[in-house]
Length: 619
Image 1: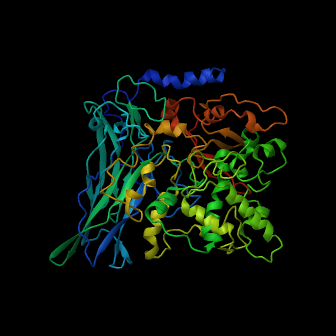
Image 2: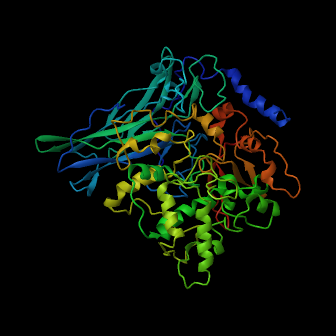
Image 3: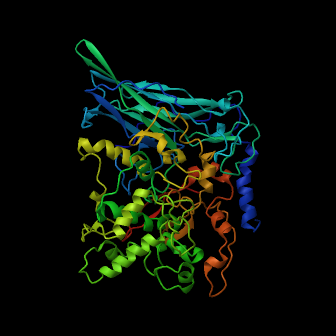
């Protein structure tokens, strides 16, 4: 059951701040700018880990866990132990007061034998005590310029700009520890980074902050860019460690578990829309690079990649295709007969909607005797031809409709493993093992297996994967959930394991936007289509409509109009398009992130549809 019992001492996260987090006069900026727009005015921190016992080894999983902020102080939910597209927290994303629940991440400990075989999960019992240690740090305002220019982001002493509560310890079952630190030249502002809890079995639950953002200055400037040195937020990251004390008779044996890492990120407003490249894809490639099999499975290897493309429609929205000239549904081609759109793309007509039954059939045919085999080969070659090549020296740029132009996300390529997998598919080196009874739009529930039925041997890897599948694996410019450090192979010393001798607490999130709401607002569809909605379907009593997710504070910058008969791309106002995907000012996101809606499946629809739900009443 994901619903947690209410905290014994509910509190507001900012009651102990000695001055407002931002000048109250700045709050009117959001509404004022909206009004103008509407009328047309445009190191290693850790102790050395204990020596591994040759006969008894312990590991914490997930190896990298993600928690998410929320403004609720009374309720939270747990990240799923296995990733599922249609996951929804029990009783929804909001608490009884309408506030967003924090997403906690639960860490487990497994014992392995000398050969790495899983022997079982370790829980707290009468003769087993688990002592957890967590070090959350936020150093966003203290770091040098996030893009490595050497220019300090903040002239203040980095130590005073780092929110570092130190190592926090928790042991036993049903315990709770608050994690708070300070920021400011005189450490005058206390910032809560989260809470540590233990469940009935002594497993650790890490909860992040409450989404607070502010400035250490009494009269700060508004957060006008992605990185605002006068500001801070309550995201964080750091190592998770555990000591296991096992009593056997009169003796107590102590074992140190292999560490894990926790990252506190923004809310996941678009959980059903998996990123084209997830954090799991990136971490797997960087920490555990393994050669792609000579022959791959369509169902297990190829389909999961292709499936992500048409799902982007639920944030980018195909209904507005004629306005932009591109959507995820038209990724590799054009549906319909609109000559303007066709001219804009100049792509393989009808090849973009991978879920179209006629297209999907050709995607998995691998039988030379099939009458459409030649067409299938041509389509696979077409798809690969359009992809950016992530291999060393590979072409990674191309104009609309040209080779090497996909994904149509700035600075993003597939991972080498994804690209090599699709290369095998293109070259007919795959097994057509797709079950013809399955609907590719909505495969059966067991396509994404639940955690509980998994064997012990499969559980640690499943936890590692589930924790990262919902994270954005690029572009890291600067990123949403985690920074570019996770794309650096030197970050890891074992598969999925962040090295304590290389990475310090706060390093994983330090280059992200500060406050996170500013980076989140600036991350338009061309940067983060799977991480935050642009357009959403809204269900009303009269039917369905398409709305800006950021309404009523959407920028609404006028777009250029394409002359009759010309390509919409010839006169597309890219700045206008990007601005229309944001709130009119970052401060609006600081104030209103807690009011935005979440995507969820419409269970009343006759076919698969994801709509906006749980938008704050009256917003």
